[in-house]
Length: 472
Image 1 (cartoon, rainbow, N blue to C red):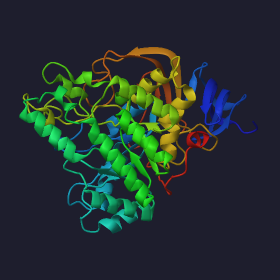
Image 2 (cartoon, rainbow, N blue to C red):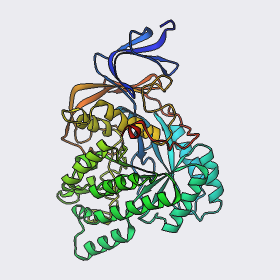
Image 3 (cartoon, rainbow, N blue to C red):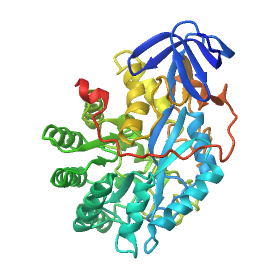
């Protein structure tokens, strides 16, 4: 090379969209400038034969957001993004959640201000639509999409749900202006019937939460949203698929040409509903929606990822403390329907997936990079993110594939106070994390600064097939 790099990562196994390269990686002005061979730089980082991967892209995280039960989640942008970085994630999409009666422009401005103060990794927002009848809604939505907020979120359940006619109307607006619509897809009538039946039968403990979310509620809503997407030719992302039947519905809809994508999460791939069956209210720590399912569902979800029926893995980070400010806000006798749903996951997503995918018989390093970084960035139009290629942001993670860590009771860097993976040993650990060429984390120490994260503009909706889809 004739021009010296700012820094060089030397001697690593570099995972790129075009394959694995054993060689150096050169960084200049915060971007990847060269890959492979011998590269010279002002600073040399010895990767020591470790895996060099793209920084994780987590496109589903709740940060500084109120639950449907009126409970504020535990993390600020500062604590959430610190936790994300310590687990190898360098870009995140969280939610700008509209309150009833609140203009969308006001919603987004408030979340932008919070992120500018605290975010230590790069970020974007999904605009959560709960009140499309508010004054100025259509104009605000059009302006925000044009300004680069290219994804919306809708619910088909809870007290923030939209009715089907409203969903179709919002999807039509998204199609007109170029936005992806993300959906929490469970049919509310089924959930309501199951919940009331369980309460009447006196089944109100956290372990009964799983039965309050029958798998048919997911299946019915996923199939309906796929039909809506096909009817309007509007791209839709189905969040947190948890069942074998949900994955099968995605496969069928995509085979028929519906413009739909879907994700799943580590807690559906690696946990079953048995985690809820604990003494007293302790099972509340593992309550999330949809709930964890069965071993057969795990097998089906892994197969769906391998086949491309599900395109990416997110954390669905929804952090609530296990105390009277969070999960137990309704008191020591809380019933399952009074307990905030969600698990912390920003910091654990990548180590859990690395451990599962890099072991013998797993999906391997290239699929790990694709499912946790490349496909999320491509699907959501996060320019410059998610892959190790020339011209991309130098968001890099060095992974020691031989380092094993056993999670403790409260060893995460968020503000939740417990680790839902306590006692689980993962092999493979992010030993250095870089954002735009600068080290955020190294050797267990964090070096980020509040407010140093940047908003990621998305000038266009990314609806083209990913490379993996083209190949399959």
